Length: 315
Ligand SMILES: NC(=O)c1ccc[n+]([C@@H]2O[C@H](COP(=O)([O-])OP(=O)(O)OC[C@H]3O[C@@H](n4cnc5c(N)ncnc54)[C@H](OP(=O)(O)O)[C@@H]3O)[C@@H](O)[C@H]2O)c1
Image (cartoon, rainbow, N blue to C red; front, side, top):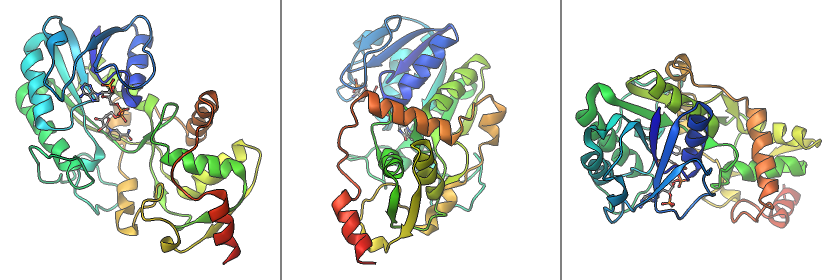
């Protein structure tokens, strides 16, 4: 099987590349060659830039499937589809759970209503990202029909997760002691391990499955994330709820209660199609190992130890 990955050197793309290689596929990755870590030697690296419409390196070649991880606006997918045409057997678009309308109750599946499509946006924000992905999904389905597959990941984490919002709490749990928590301990979380997204993508291609799939992982809570991280480090924690406004507005993984249903999406369809389910404890352990390997660089958000100690002393 031959697979082209648009964005194979990125965080999620890397997991798809590795799963495809592990299952014997020949893999090519298309990107600007700017981010991520070097790709395995057996991957064919194709250089181009979607921002400037430079798809020259994709003018030749045929693949059983393309997995598009770097499409954010309709012009991205439209240009890629124009270039690739029927030289790809299947178009797998990596969308997002942000396509769904906000404030859905817990337990919704792929039939939940999506937001209004937005064909273009100068800047991708919380307000434009989801609607732009909706329009991309529509264009891919319109062009490839039964040969279109849509993957909608929730918050992805695991080794290589440079976004670091999960890592803040993992490191904080591992440090042990009294933890200032600007939310309720039962705040729901629903991460997906990047390797489970990789497994799903490759299995969907292998089985030629069409339609949309929620790539979401096991149910958990912020308390479970912190306590499991502490336990893995051989420490204990005491979670001390602090007022939400005692923390900066953009604080890692804090979400309003009205959006908690979005962390309880139904993964049954993806699991039925072969998505693996890495336990949270394993994901955390592998995230920590990766963080140590890269030298645990400073994170530029969350409380500093001094800020947290001062806040806890005032309660
Ligand atoms: N991470 C999550 O939690 C999450 C959740 C839901 C959905 N998703 C979706 O999953 C996809 C991948 O996310 P990610 O977190 O893996 O992102 P990422 O690590 O930022 O990777 C983005 C990839 O796209 C490539 N790229 C960026 N700009 C490009 C350009 N102008 N031309 C060509 N290639 C370009 C990058 O390589 P170069 O920089 O080398 O070009 C890289 O390979 C995205 O579509 C995202 O919307 C992610």
